Amino acid sequence: MRIAVTGGCGFIGSHVVDHLIAAGHEVLAVDTTDKYLNPDAEHARIDVLDLPALTAALAGSEVVYHLAAMADVEQVTADPVGAVRANIDGTETVLEAARRSGLSRTVLASTVWVYGAALADQQLDQLDGEEQELDEHAPIALEHSGHLYVATKLAAEMLVHSYRELYGQHFTILRFGIPYGPRMRDELVVARFVQAALAGRPITIAGDGRQSRNFVYVEDLADAHVRALSPAAEDQTFALEGSTAISIRDIADTVDELLGPVTIEHIPGRKADYAGRRISSAQAKRLLGWSPRTNFTEGVRRYAQWYQDAASASG
Image (cartoon, helix red, strand yellow):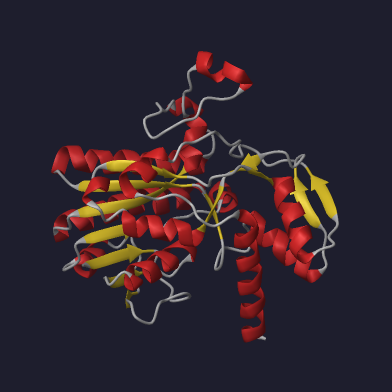
């Protein structure tokens, strides 16, 4: 199958390209950079906002994975107009190019941050003092969308559903857990902690460090993308969440165990940060046979090794 991947030379997109090629597919990486371009992939240096160029590039493909986006929440805060153009207008352009080129499906990269706006049953929340586990059918309260990044992702999901309703365009939405692993941006928390430890600098924690996330290793996410080609994934949404909640302090302790000893410093917390929710990936396991396989310590070890190897190669 011929498949296009927007953002195919970025952190997650490049791993998706790698896994699709390993599965025997012909892949076109659509990206304005070639930073992590797989040599066995075709490359189209196109901005996803360029509808005529993107439409021409997608011709002949059957599926497009849309991963090109502004994903750094700090950058979104600093440049809200750019974030809306990249994450909302970009999604609209990809959907329209896919429609004009006759593709069978668009696979949208979304995020578990959208569950920050999910409504949970308050009675169930109080059972055993634990929050209700949320799934793909949890209703969303738009007035609780919070961070602009969440608003852009909710808007992108709404566009996908509208294209299905109006034009019959099939879709799959993949809501990523908090990703980490080789090629991740230096700004991401696991990268910052590892790089600080390797450089002998203190690790800085925003807030008290008790806030937790279900981190998911990037190659596990890439595996889910290959599985999402299944007919069972058509017109479905999947939460791709890590299996274990990891607090920010747990990350620091893991880095200390692997690369320490390290010094830890605390700074004020970040505004409108994703507080974390209990999210079920049962649908991905049931329909795709997917569940995360890489434990957190092993994933951090692999990232640290990749980072050291990359630093040595560039030095």
